Image 1 (cartoon, rainbow, N blue to C red):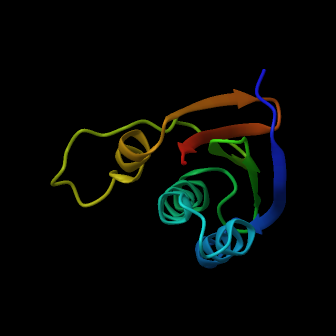
Image 2 (cartoon, rainbow, N blue to C red):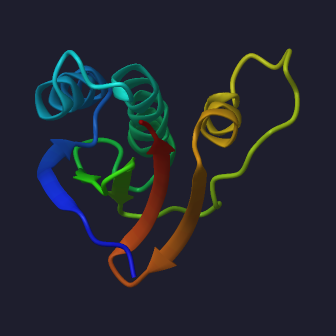
Length: 129
């Protein structure tokens, strides 16, 4: 069982403007000197973008962002209202879109997606230290 310190939870509108709010939230919670700041900020940006564009949270629904410091890694949950298709890594480096989860795959220690009655959660962990 993983334990840690919940740094915070914020609720974002399911609109593209929320992506920059999510990045700002990560910066405030982790602080400028945190060794995982850049990777966590980038990955939050990618996952929240997916939520506000592809999930049923788009067009004004809600996206929840939770961040925890678990001693040697940062754990992030992004919860949305789910959708018709599950997020997946696309292997085409030259496609116009679809590389966000490829970045999550490359930069995170681990990540996953699961559906639940309230919608869908995409989570990832970034090691530091």
